[in-house]
Length: 221
Image (cartoon, rainbow, N blue to C red):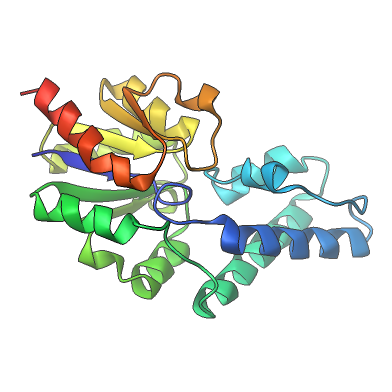
């Protein structure tokens, strides 16, 4: 058995269902207020920011904005997403509940690790009943927004090896490579194939994760 470290947005949660409309609403407010130029954003332009913690995202996306405006935009986007999730607009990826249930039934320890804030994590735990699947929950706000690969080093002594990192962005594969862990890259998510190149196994849909976990655990036995 293994300790499976799951990224959340873009790996378990189909984030663009709520993130894309919330992003566009926020950008409209910024343009209507004269802070940025009015323009349309494609889904790929929006989804590239999924997986970043929200403070880093705004710092990189619009560094020219005053800090208080970036913070207001960050909060606005988050509140917009929260309303949409509460209204039932969000969803886990198709088949993901069965995948998580299967892995849990096999005896693996499932660990949630996300570059999100505590409020976001707790809301999604409740709305999607994530405690059915995950044994432990960690998010970057609890660790003063450290990178995931550093957060792993802080909580890993509490759990049993081997560890397998499962995610769709470079933050996840970096967590594995920086700590000598196995990894599964999720190509159905929002990262590029370039970000996943160092993953041990790349899957094209959630349903392929259990067999990938099996293959990696067999290699290490």
